[in-house]
Length: 198
Ligand SMILES: O=C(O)CCC(=O)C(=O)O
Ligand SMILES: [Mn+2]
Image (cartoon, rainbow, N blue to C red; front, side, top):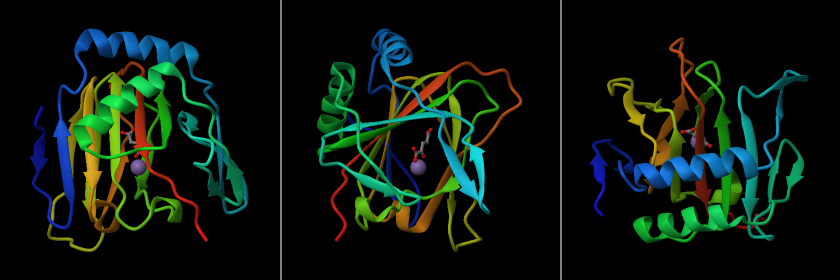
């Protein structure tokens, strides 16, 4: 299967629209909704605890540990469904992953703000495979310094894989904006390779 290269300076982004069939995607969505240990995490903003506008979970190899807001996060052990998705991502991306962050957006009011995936544990130029199941959501990229470049919008469909690699995280931020449209549940999985930071 070949993906579609997204035209973006200073980045390497490939979109595989049908990495998973629609039957496979429906089955996977049901399993993830029931079997993942979803958490409501908070982020600290100016000393105040604000609940994140989505549910999350972290799975992976035991050594795939990362530190976030001074908290050492240990992954939960792989589930068969996650290994199955990981194997397919590794084959399509020609890369290895040792962990996955899951995000569950229950409706259109749930979102993720502008950010780049640049935790030190990911290394400078991470390969990240972002897989989506359920409702289609708008995903946007914005170049960090070049104001002449327009925002890029991709509708991430159920069963799709968005591969982000090379200098993508160094030069571009991304987000999943809120929408007032009535939107069903969507689950996104970002497969990553985490290494210990000295
Ligand atoms: O839900 C998405 O498509 C994006 C998730 C994301 O950017 C992340 O987990 O870092
Ligand atoms: Mn991200």
